[in-house]
Image: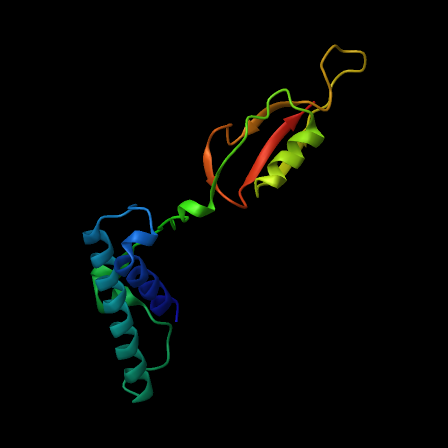
Amino acid sequence: MKFLGIRAEIDLVRNNPDLFHPDHQGSDLARGYDLYTKAINMLNRHARRVASKEIEPDLFDAVAYDAELRELPVIVSHKKAPESDMVLVPKLRDVGVDNAKELLTSQGLKPVSNATAVELGSKVPVNIVTTQSPDGNTSVPKGTSVVIEVA
């Protein structure tokens, strides 16, 4: 099932290039698809041999059937967010933490605040955003977490 699922995902990326970032060349995807197809065929062959009592039941080892299957590729593709789902992260440095959280939430973003301790009596302003990630004016999909550092 794992091999079938991976092959189906590769097929989805190959047949819908407008939905994914071009992380891989078409030849990489084609080779991955072919290798997983070969692994599935070898697994089916192994299962038939076990079912016909030609061999004893044992764990499937793709390499025993074909050395090329020693390292099946791991292919990661990033889905493109539709332009309508993208928002600009606001610049939050020197903004009060409550205002920063409200602003992020109103943009469809998820605020995550990290507080850092300051020494009592220090001149460091508290409850003010000192840094953020991702930076302001970065385009991200709605729902992205924005980490704000607050003293």
